[in-house]
Image (tube, rainbow, N blue to C red):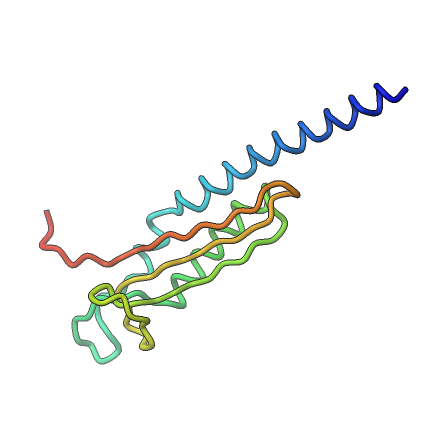
Length: 131
């Protein structure tokens, strides 16, 4: 009888660990493969006064990222925390205006008892001369 209980407990532990590892991998893939269009659609090229100025539209970006994650993450986690850090690419200092050219977004989620997901990814606007 004790052997059966031990086997059931060990099997349960193994399955929990295996499923958690697969869910961790899925959350990681979802976060890192954030659709490029979500980021690109949040880039403005003209400011409020009509002058050329390339910057990230914070509201549009945050809404797009939230929609993407709300559609893709509930399969793997029940809740998650998303945070943003806007900064200037040139010096890395925090951007307090609404005309930032760089962002670092972080995702935290508890997958199960064994796995906690925490990762950040940065995006920069590169004003190049086209290809």
